[in-house]
Length: 153
Figure 1 (cartoon, rainbow, N blue to C red):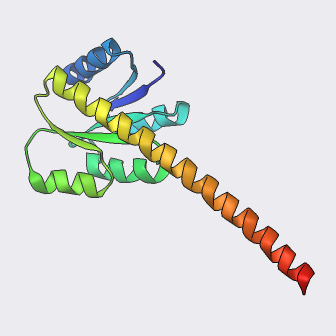
Figure 2 (tube, rainbow, N blue to C red):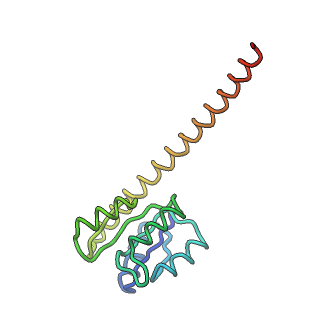
Figure 3 (tube, helix red, strand yellow):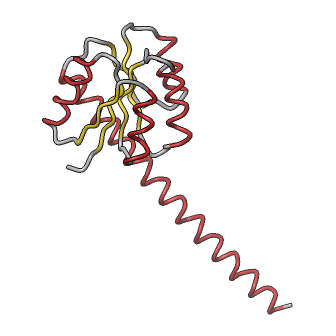
């Protein structure tokens, strides 16, 4: 499977464990310890999904989601938090996160959330492509119609 996942987690043991688990599901994982490291990785590769810890050194996970959604809009985001806070979860969703997981994360829970986020990403990319194709056809036909009306005048 060519699914590339960026795991941004400052706790090495958790970062490694998430990478191991997702590799077992056929994902190609790149690990980053903070937002700066993640940005370097994003310059090297496109990612289908980023699994981002909420509490990163230097920049908050929410701020990193803002950056990611504006600069890499085709990358799905799933947030990981230490606490079950509905306000933080809602903020993550408002910024465009597809999921919000609470540590400790059970392997099955991680796999299901990643799978759902990737499925949603695929549907959104297909929808965007179809919308752009339709817009192009409308522009083309409008142009032809304008040309035909000009010839009739």
